[in-house]
Length: 173
Image (tube, rainbow, N blue to C red; front, side, top):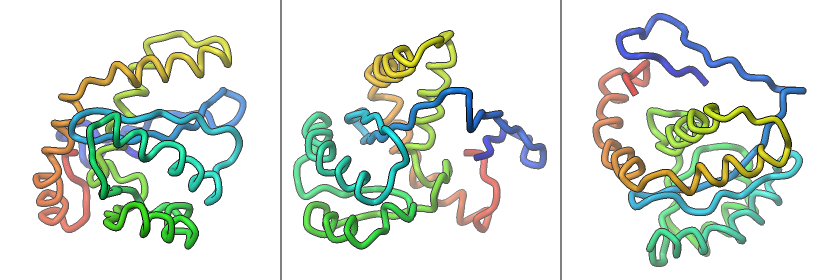
């Protein structure tokens, strides 16, 4: 993923990441205009079955936590796991309205901005153990303010117009 600074569209501003050996923790989370839902830690490599289990365990509970009543609108990217038939069928029954966006698109998917926000909060700590790698994201996730989520959701019409104006190219988001 590339995050560009304002007025630096042509310069590459890459955030280095360590894919192996540096320690990482994959998580699933959700958000709405009122705040964040559950944060679910993922062990191993996520496949469509694991993703379906995460939805079953967390979606309803997260919606209740955020004050959202059924039927839910599920906003997710086009990751192959999300589009697997077993997941689409479950969503059809539990979330008849699924809104899909391109994968890892911060312009069109506000949760990408929440992940960046969470990552910036976690980077302030010197994490030195696997235990801390589980504790810090959870404690920082629960501290994400509702107004951060609200401003991201409210920015969606502007984001969509910007993407259209830029014909799918670089935007300031």
